[in-house]
Amino acid sequence: MKPINIKKMTIDSAMPIGLLLLMGYGLVGQVIHEWIGVGMFILFIWHHILNSNWSKSLFRGRYNAYRLAQTALVSAMRLCTVGLMVSGIVLSRHVFSFLPINGGRQLARTIHLLCAYWGFVLMSVHLGFHWNRMMGMMRRRKKKESSVSAKLLRSLTTVFVAYGVYAFIFREIGTYMLLQSQFVYFDFEEPLMLFFLDYVAIMGLFIYIGHYAEVLLRGRKKKARS
Image (cartoon, rainbow, N blue to C red; front, side, top):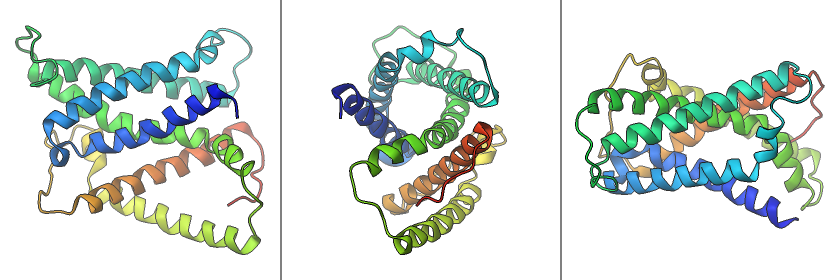
């Protein structure tokens, strides 16, 4: 595998992990949350530098349904990321506390909440859009799976996605995305692993949605895959 592809895979793997940790703001602590946020923004910039050819080609070629959706998705993700970083700097009590920022905290808190949950969902859908490519790279590094293991994996995926629907409702993600609630509740007696399990399942749900949206938008039949 080429060095640049290794770098891309490393960054693309680190960003979802960082995002999951950021969603547990009330459980991991404010200082850690701020430093992870800074790290995520650095990864975001690095990701776009490594994929700069995509940005350079925005005004070239024809746009079909898939390319329009992908461009809108990436643009929305970029907007959320910039919104998170700017509002995060305003809200910062540790990493950027040296900056002479006064006022605007209430607006910044609202923007941060909105961008955090929309960014979480959009990044998950974005991963789904590229799921075939990532799985293709992994398949080239291992032997072909048996039909039994493929069916088992599909069954487990169905169960996991169903749990993701439950977790989405239970964690009231939709209320935060629509600003119906501007206070995120954290149960400090809840095991940290259970919290992250729910958010991994929610991420899996939107990866699943993004994957099949990509298949539909490309207008091609999905091969039977695990």
